[in-house]
Length: 75
Image (tube, rainbow, N blue to C red; front, side):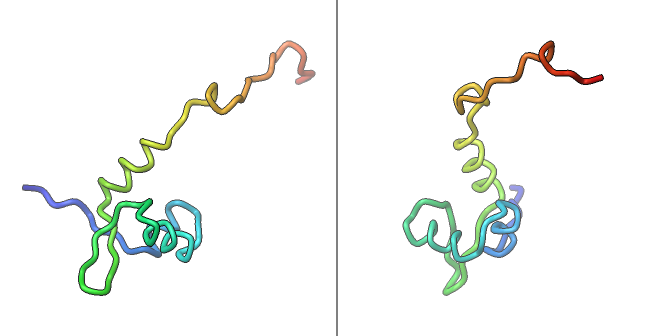
């Protein structure tokens, strides 16, 4: 059995580029996977990766259209 890396809230907040307080709020609202070890909160790396993957959307779904390059003056 291989154990996943266990991350702290500040580590995950830095990865996600959000504040630790925002991450704690998501955890409090049960909107983010976490493990409590006593009073400490930890995030399993594979849970973080899965959480990110579930929220990934292709550019087309975001309404982003790539510009037609023939109209750009790149010279």
